[in-house]
Image (cartoon, rainbow, N blue to C red; front, side, top):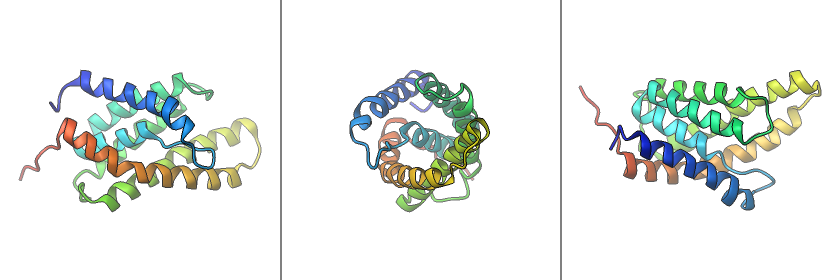
Length: 164
């Protein structure tokens, strides 16, 4: 089932719905977790940079369609996260909850950093205090959700066996 694109895209659509409808009501300190970012990290981390970039591009497009930011900011940042997760594919232990947590937290900071750099250029205000507060809470919330989604995605899509 690893190459079933319909299941992949349906999963991304379901994650977007959960992010916008379910977790919009379950905000912690005004933020919700980045479920599509977790999916991008998972597919890059388990299936390589090409699949991670594909999921990142689709996730970024979905996020951009339903957000107020300029189109392309999320596509660019999610695409980079998919590439970087794919780069780390053989360098970290995939089944470790701590790895999943910290990789997801770092991805949130990376995406938030790109977003706030973009806002700083457009708005012109110093947004560093907002970045650290919102980014920290979002990173922790997303990191806590990552092992759950990694487990679900592993059950649905499997994990490729390492070939020597």
